[in-house]
Image (cartoon, rainbow, N blue to C red):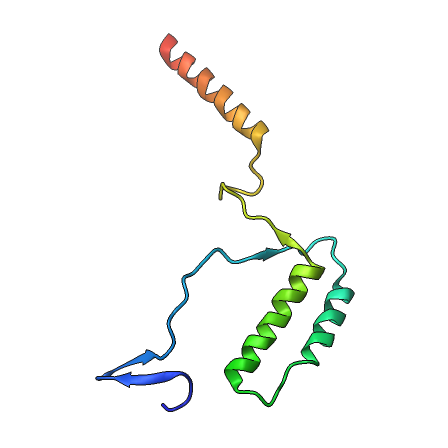
Amino acid sequence: MSEGPWEVVGLSLSTATCAEPMEEPVRFRDRGVDWDVFERTVQMRVGRIRWGAPAAKVAGSFTDVIIRSARECLGVIRPRSFYGYEWWNEELNRMRGETAKEESLAENES
């Protein structure tokens, strides 16, 4: 088990690097984008990676190429403050409220 950034601690195995806090993943647009431009941008930037560098450095560079290219060519979908159904909207909220009022009135009349 000498491959990777691992070190043996006692009888357990742990990573030598610290874990980074998880955050909401970036969501990229996938509709109405020019995939040819994205592909050309990625290919151009991948050609600049120093492939003889350590594997972790190459992997980081490759990831950076993909993310930078996606941000520039595809665009980012801004995070929503409400993580409900994507198809839910204000009109449905209004209708839900009206239905609840009608049900409440019907129950009070019985």
